[in-house]
Image 1 (spheres, one colour):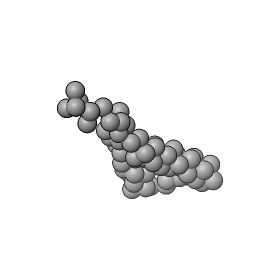
Image 2: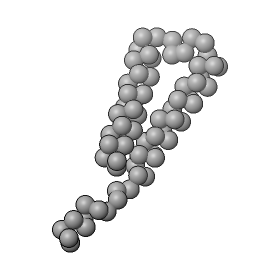
Image 3: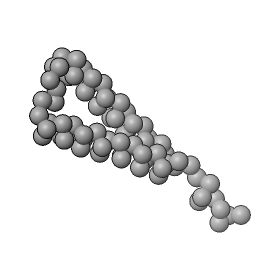
Image 4: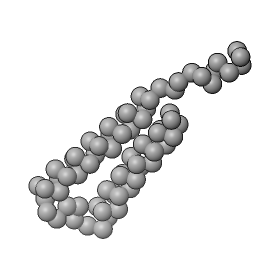
Length: 69
């Protein structure tokens, strides 16, 4: 019975909340910029940059959800 106690401990969900919050904040920032500048992000390089940053936030949020779940 004592061997199972380490597995019974709940992992902290704080990393997931931080990554999910950053992803949500990024979405709000993108929406605000997009509303202010209709041509945002403007170039192919800008589009790829936005996609890359978004992908990093999504992978971090999913990874921390799996790790803390």
